[in-house]
Image 1: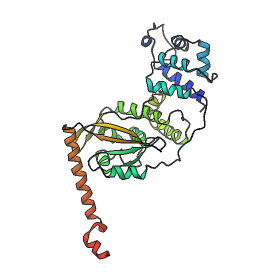
Image 2 (image 1 turned 60 degrees about the horizontal axis):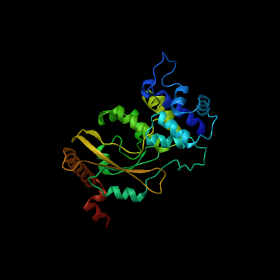
Image 3 (image 1 turned 30 degrees about the vertical axis):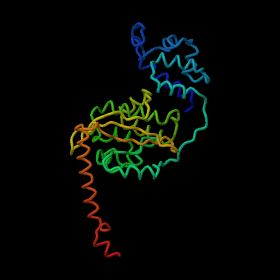
Image 4 (image 1 turned 90 degrees about the vertical axis):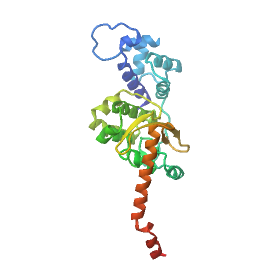
Length: 294
């Protein structure tokens, strides 16, 4: 997809989400399509209707930064969406794409494995869980397990709906963060494959993807309804992993002294017990077995 087409798609999608009353304009009768008309948005941005039409149709390839800022204000975009609008308005540039199969750095895997009571995982460019420590998997095994794609799980795994509180808000955020991760590279083949798959299977995904919402790659505070320890309200830290193509380390924690921190402590004990039980059942971990092989 050419950047000009990406710009046009974005402008149309965001224009459709605004109503005249949202921007102080009178609602003038019945409208054939939802949202603002092209000429209304052009007027709000202070540009001609013809120039705006060329932008939407991909016939204008070099809009100035001032025009993009004016359109962002007219569309009521936040700073992250404005940055995205600037990015897709630029001419095509050679893009470096990561190899199809991503891997978390071994040093990061070793680091989070040494945290027995802190859930942590590595999120890849397409929102795949690339690595997760035992505590993260104990917290949410249906989604925080290596090999799981968070977007696919959100829309295809019914257990995710019971695990999380406000599923609609979670789903909206997941889709917006996927767009934030891939940025302007919307024709990336692995992304296109994921979008096609979910668009075919989920009307809700199609609706949210068509909104063109863009969010930074952060996971807000949320509640996980754990079957063993109850509801846990989690705070999130998101750290970019240097020398990778868009990978992030996600760390969960709870307010000190809170019931959620106590629940995490109980869960850590349960997870440690399960690991010990598994180790004792493994022949190579048995002292007698070790003596037999010595």
